[in-house]
Length: 305
Ligand code: GLN
Image 1 (spheres, rainbow, N blue to C red):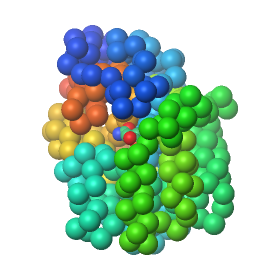
Image 2 (cartoon, rainbow, N blue to C red):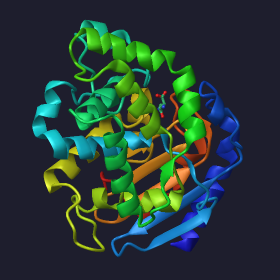
Image 3 (cartoon, protein in one colour):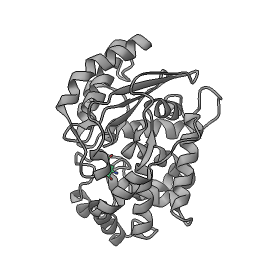
Image 4 (cartoon, helix red, strand yellow):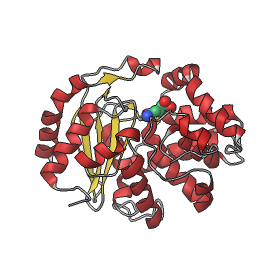
């Protein structure tokens, strides 16, 4: 595995030049674009890593996968009354479909869909309860109590989040949000601002590769049918208007974040996290996708195998 990870990083390294670091969130613009890390967690819970695999980065939209799991456990299938599960074919912060589809976001992984999920996870509790749930899940599954919110990134997002507020107000006008807009967006900005390393993230996502169970302890994190459905949504919607390209090249359920991380799930094998901050036009890490492509080529872990 050490060799495979080193080879994947070597194949990916030249692709760093093909991307651009997210700069619409000022705190993210400062990250060094040459960073490149990868980690793999296996069914025994063992974690391998290479490159910058121990350096925490902003997980951003990767958090949407975990809040989805938590919200489904909290409210069940009624979540789907407020959010769909079809690919959007649009950017993560697009507003166009929301009008024609009466405020119901296409899927839980675009920004408006994730805000609906966060609103449902909050329920009738204070907004911070959703973040407490998220951190508890991430810390338990990463086996690391140090996982936390990067307050500088959270502040930066909140200070510049006009577009996300617009999306939230738009949905509010259609009755899709139960809580106040500011409560929902504040929680959403904080979930996106959680910082984790590749090693922590790979370990945290492991339950999705094993039908919802932490394969090391055998404890059920989410029901098997939910894990399968979360993976299906990741496969079809995890990279916005780049989801088809990612499925074509990598063939694994995955979720990108504009911090440059990607979480990919190899069902029955394990969970992979990559990080490289330079993004393609759809907000997916350019080198990160290339590393996963190289890893799957070598291991044969594509779900289409
Ligand atoms: N926090 C970011 C935003 O809302 C998340 C986007 C992403 O990672 N694709 O714009």
